[in-house]
Image (cartoon, rainbow over all chains, first blue to last red; front, side, top):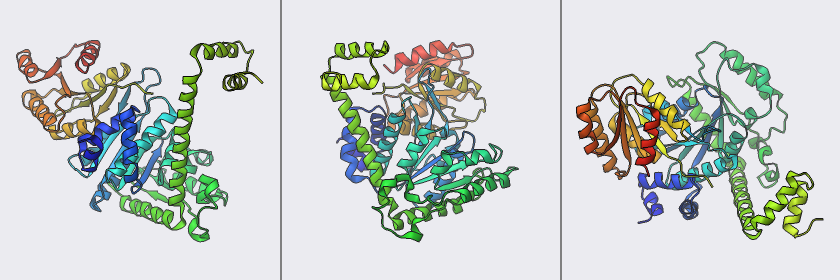
Length: 331
Length: 131
């Protein structure tokens, strides 16, 4: 029996093996993804991001426990950084997820960022698709909040939680562009710590300042017209939820907010819009990769190096060089 | 695209709370370019086997300073086999009397490292074991 059939039959070892294939981007992994593709598309993908030390893993732990009480199967992809120098990594998110072991309805997979941003997004997308096809209703993706990779992962998720904690930055941090903008739900974790009011106030004022175009479809501007024009339902203002993830305070309320957001996505048509945007960017990525590798196969290495030399010497700009390589002559 | 990385689960079974050694080894393996999944303290053999399965690791490192290695190591090897992971190797770091080493090796433990063991040796042995 092949791995894919085994996964669909609920074999956890087969699932783990295929995840490895996908992470290593092997032929077997690609084939498995293709076979599993029609089975996916049902899970609710929840991204959890935020600065190191805000309590993301503990929060994921609590949320998973809560979803299990609702009898939903939960998969977790926990991403931690690889060393840019040695390529090694210490993946420590499981330390905070002790409570989840021994439950066959939960599957946790740790993943290192391994350098390339595009590669990470692709591998994460592949992994969530496998979990989705394997019948996990909830797939949580936890990442360290450090920039572009989070934005990529927010694109992947249906609902993105941005986790903050008191004492990590002033209100200037909150009005900076970037990570807070991707939030569908803002979580103020460690709400028993001093300064929680200030953190919440800063986030609130950021939300109030937001331009009215904080329309949910602005993430995927080009789909605005594709979605049904239900004006009231289409406006989503990220709620701010206080939690204390070590004792579970605020978790039922947070889970409720997540459910409300999922419902909002369905009613507003943004669920479908996000799916389309995601599939489109996946297509783009694969297309680019394929074209580049086809091109590299056709152009002899020596020719490539020769042109590259001219670029090094600055006698040819990279754009001119590409023109030369693609047309056979410079323009 | 990406190379196959050696994935190592570093776990502390049993009840002793001394994890400095496990962390030093985890860090050393990271610096050797491996991906180390660290589980934290007080893991049962079942928890370790389950983590090894979910993470599809190549090798499991057990840190044991409680003296319970002759009970814990065989149990974990047994569970790995039961899960279909008989190819996954196991090594031990901690306090293990010399006379226990042959028996541990006989049941499939690839290396036993006590105080003063060099992390270079551990790295070399892991690379050899997962070949």
